[in-house]
Image 1 (cartoon, rainbow, N blue to C red):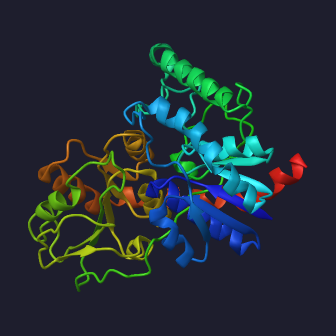
Image 2 (image 1 turned 135 degrees about the horizontal axis):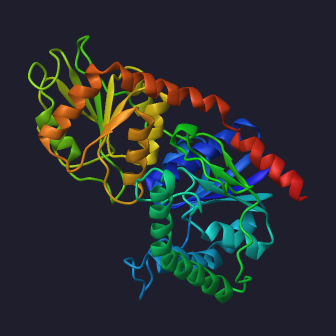
Length: 390
């Protein structure tokens, strides 16, 4: 089967797309990734055919502060730009990242079946949940349900505006205004990070997190047998700033943390940082670090949180914007970690010491990892969806 996989350049979306391509390759399929130019060499080095996704750069008149225009109008323009590339690939199926909506639109323009990839929990509105992004658990009792009803009413206008903008964008490129949606939605998360809802979509299937390591390097941690604390600043533009610097100043073995504690800061890049002798800073495989870690301190993007829980490691989440507040609160409710906001040295030190000294966090992280055994295989889901649509 030939598959075109479409994803934007944000690591939280490009990396899961590369991981899915590798899963297709292992199954004997022939995927091609369309993404930002900065990841083409990375994908190709991993054995994935990759070409540039056209239209990612803003055009004259684009307003990147208008999320609706960015999500819908630009997606429609990008769909038209990328139709020739996808047509040349002659795919049997298109997989389109959830926020890179041009992939699904281009598939429709070409009359091709398509599947949506959601590299985080399902964030569609639900009649049984508070608005996503609030971080709140579903309300309990009359007062709780009333709270959720009021909150949903307050967000309904924004949701409707988004629907209208999407309909107009679709109509503008010759598609029906009413979006038929994908054959399947691959929800690439852990069951522990999902929230039960009474209106789970029929096409949505939890397939487990899709992780890709952009390097083969292994970060050499300081010697010793004390606890290993890994720090991973957010790669998202909305992530909390300064996490590495604050953590290095706060995590002091023998003072704020147990004697012999070691710290490894894993990041794609960043400014030069003063590194104490008990710490190391650099780019290295996070999955390898997590096999040795006792604690992860990270921005609470879904990628690093799910990767940490898959390793059965507890965490301290430092949420920034976007969906990070939602993810961090789900971690707290699940019991596998702490949340701190605002980011201060005292808060980092206190939360890290608490999680390291309390075995219950590790137990809940291991419980979250065990849930990965119940997910579906995304490649099989795609094959079966395509067969059913034939």
